[in-house]
Length: 221
Image (cartoon, rainbow, N blue to C red; front, side, top):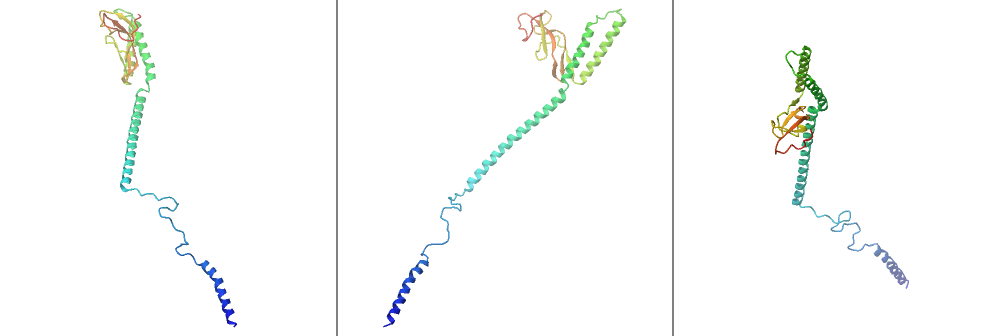
């Protein structure tokens, strides 16, 4: 008679323990560790499609072409800069004395004016006048030689066609002995510094019949 209650108590214990045991057992098919979703990278974004070798080669060739074009342009610009610098240095070396030379030729012209102011040479003239003329002529020749050694030259335009690049017309006069548009008289020569105009010649231009007068000529006498 006492055995039945014991059996019932054991059944009650087993019944109370089963919910705890079922709660501790994990569900089948469920992973407890973390995992990555297909098509996602580590940062959670979508994976990028890999570039094909052909596209990669095409991109590199385009980059090489662009860099080559930049290099060609840069090299051309460098050559232009070097050429300009060389030309500027050469001009500075050759024409650095331009302002000084322009002042020097003024002294040469004064010597010529001094000679022109002397009376024409005649027989039996005063010895003092003769010596003075010879002294000025010698000084002028020496002075001109010094200027020529330094690239300074003068040109007498008398009888030559008027050139606005070298001559400055001070007057225009009718003349039967000179062609129209030619220099009939030069007051001063044209001075050049190594081929570059240093000071234009002051000239008088002949005016003929039907031919047009040179441009830029002052017709006032």
